[in-house]
Image (spheres, rainbow, N blue to C red):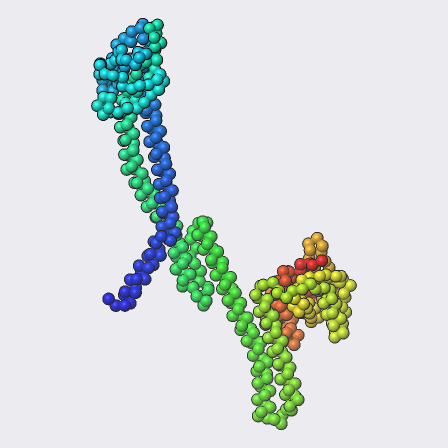
Length: 465
């Protein structure tokens, strides 16, 4: 046999062993159902047989006591037990004993025999071999006469009761295995049908790779757990597909942003090499330095975004007075721009975080407001003691952000129409960094319309006061 065929046969046997082996859900569910039903049927069968045996034996005892009491009543009233005839000489017998235990009267089928049992009045016993091999139930009662007390022994055959119990046992011994077989087969097929969508889901998942995240697992009808599983997996695949698309878009945008300064450096260097008379070393160095700084800023922003993507709490966090950072950036902006900076709404606010990241977040928000403001920027900081939040707000009096674009401003490399120029809008990473820093510090950020018609950015961070 060829090695490939032999390996294929081994793989098929291995797959079938995994599918129907002892660890298989189908096998374990079927075995569990059969075991539980089997235990229940066994307990029920034992209880049924026991109850039937006690009931039939009780009926025989009641009938025997009733007949013995008739003989006792007749003996007490007339002093003569009368005829001790029995309906069936093979099924019943009667003996009357005196106070010494001697037989003074009996039915014809036990005439001349010693007492069949030694019982006190009210007692009973089961005996074998009284008449042939049939089991009998013997009961005793007392008759009180002027001549003394007499004990009446009445025995009735238990053969009918025993035969009924044996018949029920036989039916149960035959029916219980058949019923367990039906339970096992039914459970096997029902579980198989229930797990069929799982096999389809597993088969589809095996075909999905990192380049085929657009594929989805089959969605079975209904709203059971497997349908919920398929829905959850499709949601996960959709999120992975979206994340992969955003990652590809991010890489493409980053490459595009880096290509421009690299191309500029190369262009100026080639011109300097081929036409040295057209430039000077200081001019070339100034151009290269400017483009290098641009690349450096972009790389640093990308590194910050990479850290925020880890979505882990800052490891070097410390308690920070956020108002000090805001005041520092407000003073810087007053010194470097002609805008009116309103910081009257500043109060104290303490948060836990990484100083460099929070400083970058505040600087990016204030610089973004400065790029779009006409003449005025307002910054505010309050501590909401009830909600245990520090609220930082930056407003400008610019054109504002349309409502349909407010969710986009925090995406990477996004420049709205009024901020597409790199000289003013940067690479489009500033607000993305702000959102990432706020998120890993356990806060939220929102953009709305300011009172003067511009944009209003509001950051909420957990307070440490």
